[in-house]
Image (cartoon, rainbow, N blue to C red; front, side, top):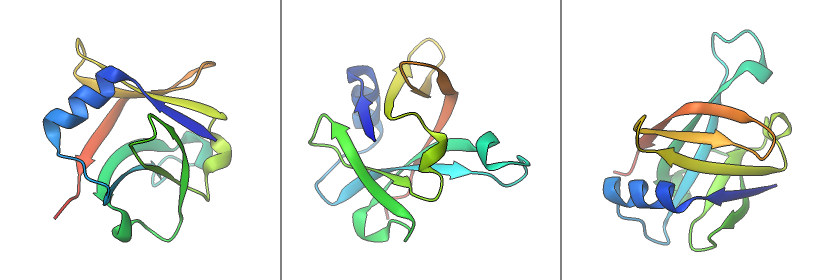
Length: 113
């Protein structure tokens, strides 16, 4: 699995948090109340690498100076190639693939302490 961060997404994240080598982006997959794993909602969470949940698995990221992890229990619901983008007109992050839009209004949370 691969994930690409667009320049718009990177610029917006940099406005919200200062990244170091100790941080990672965790692509969570919330399924509570959705009725099915496939209907889960993705969120983008900034956290310390050493605080990632046990279910986190690192995935190949472009650009390489960012680290992204995904919930390995549900990685099968995603396409092989993912893109995290930011749409300024909607002021929202988006999770998509070359084939489909996965979450057009993805929440970005900073959980750094």
